Amino acid sequence: MITFPMLPGIEINLFLLVFTGLGTGLISGFAGVGGGFLMTPALIILGFPANIAVGTSLAWVAGNSVVGAIRHGRMGNIDIKLGLVMILSLMSGMEIGVRILNRAKGIGLVDESVLSVSLVVLLVVGTYMVYESVRRKRQIEELLRRGEKAPPLGISSIAQKLHRLRVHPVVHLTAANISVSLWIIVTAGFCIGILAGVMGIGGGFITVPTLVYLVGVPSFVAAGTNLFQVIFASSYGVVRHSMSGNVVILASFIILIASSIGVQLGVLTTRYVRAVSVRYILGICVLLAAVGVALKLSGVVLGESAAWTGTASVIVTFGGLGVSVAMIVSLFILSIRHRRGGGIPSWVRSLMSDTIG
Figure 1 (tube, rainbow, N blue to C red):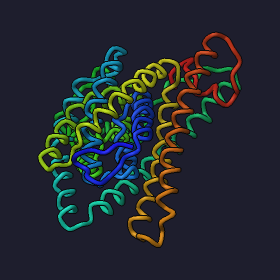
Figure 2 (tube, rainbow, N blue to C red):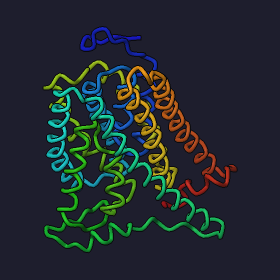
Figure 3 (tube, rainbow, N blue to C red):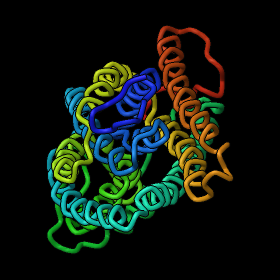
């Protein structure tokens, strides 16, 4: 157990804190997300007050995203123009989000507010990502059964319709190889920023599917670009939360050391898998996180009458994190085996990167 000067009387399990950093780092590098959607609820469950969990999570997200962005940048997965637009729009929205959180803190409803917003967003995003990726996975499996190669994933129907809205200025995104109205990107970034400020996240688990499904950006470019913009957006959030006394620097540093190891393996794994595997596993991670948040919220609302929810939320949150880590590590091992001509289960072939799907 460990205590922090900013949290007098609160003991934090050091093993679970390090494990959380390692696991979220792996998921962050693999899926191209900051990891705050996992980190913030985990810190609350470990005993951090919600407002401090939000600020500390953002501080970790900023440092963790630097590590992941460097690796993705070397692989050509970052669209600088898209990233800069997202940075400016996200920061504007995050300012509003931080003010909303401070307002909730002032009336004594910060835990309920953060957990409620987190639960709704996690359920919506996770459900859609799992639905879409399972459908795509089945399409690839059918093509493989017929001995055909899976074509690259096309732009979604929603993105195609938005591309027809030629509201000027229209910008061309080189790395993503698409042209889209600047206002679509700005609006998406602003809305994500509000949620990021309230939830204590970099916004990655919302940004990546938004860029893929609404803007039409390829999955790996969406992942790399997201990590690039999260560095700046989350850093702004850290400054604002630090001014409000919501950041425990030592805790963020401990988590960052552990996560740096996981990020490297996560990014490396993306070389061997189809893009659909990123969306598939990220969707599962999001839904698992939603279950943990739901249990924690139940405990906060019901109080002592639901004391069991505290233990259950710990089991689900950290058990779910362990499952997610196991999935990514297994996928990496099976991918290497597949590349070397070894046998792999038939159900996992659709996730291997013969071609990008």
